[in-house]
Image: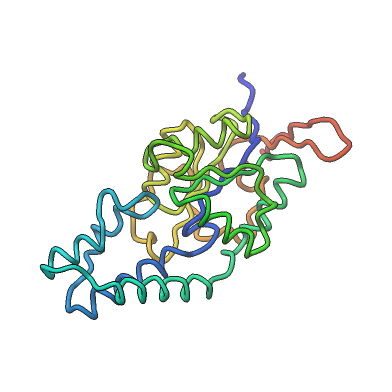
Length: 241
């Protein structure tokens, strides 16, 4: 009988998972499209979620439709509106509690995001949770963003944990694909933008992280929990039967 793997690290996505920036970003562009009498194609938009604008650039798409460039005034207002909407958001339910609980029992915690270091760190610091994460890897740190596995590979290398001993928590199909390509377990928690998307490649899909604990995640994935509490020796807890 083989030894059950132990969960040693939890790696969080940022946009749409820690903080719901996805809805504000989408809405800010939707308002621009609507003001210009155009429809923002949601299926094309979803190609960018959890990744980059390489597959779909909303500005270039709208300018091509209009046959002219958007004015700087329109672009500045879009950015102002995005910031306004993002600042209205709080940390999504259960995220801070799960990260803190993981740290308390000696698990490693990280963030792997297709956004920039500046964007991620600014918001984590503003929200007072930057210190909950030992390692943050963003698009500045890798060649390819999600759905490529590079961000997760870089984060796990930073944390010193093997893929089979870690779980990625994601909200988008691109993120799930990246986590699985990196060899990790994956828990998907869709948000208002990704709720209707195919997240079936995740090992587990949850409606929220509210009430989630390292133990409950490990149990749902068939893992044990690696504990290394302050002043004690590492202990691998057997998962409930």
